[in-house]
Length: 116
Image 1 (spheres, rainbow, N blue to C red):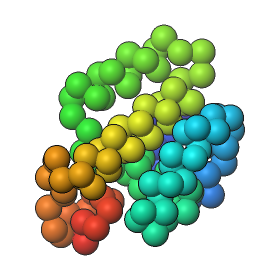
Image 2: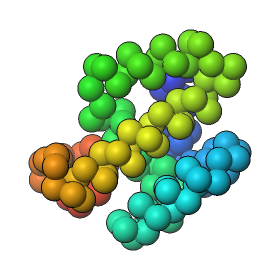
Image 3: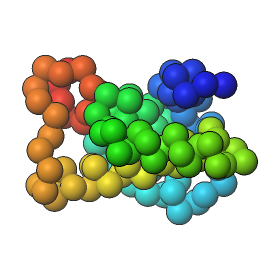
């Protein structure tokens, strides 16, 4: 599966929830659940939104890091999911703390509260 297919697959809420559950990382699951609740999303919705936002908003450095990690991983899809979720959780925490600017109104990045 290529990276584009992986992201498209994760954008489906049911697939996103299953993929997160398959990681078996209860700490990450709890963090995703807690952050999702802050935005009125269930786990699957938060995973789907995270994949869309990573695809739309992650910078070159994040993309290069993701691709490099996937190339070295035994399970590249799981590695990609972990990295995208970590990026989304970090970004959301910074936005909630007011330390980074939220996506502009009317954009279609899938950001929480974006309005796009």
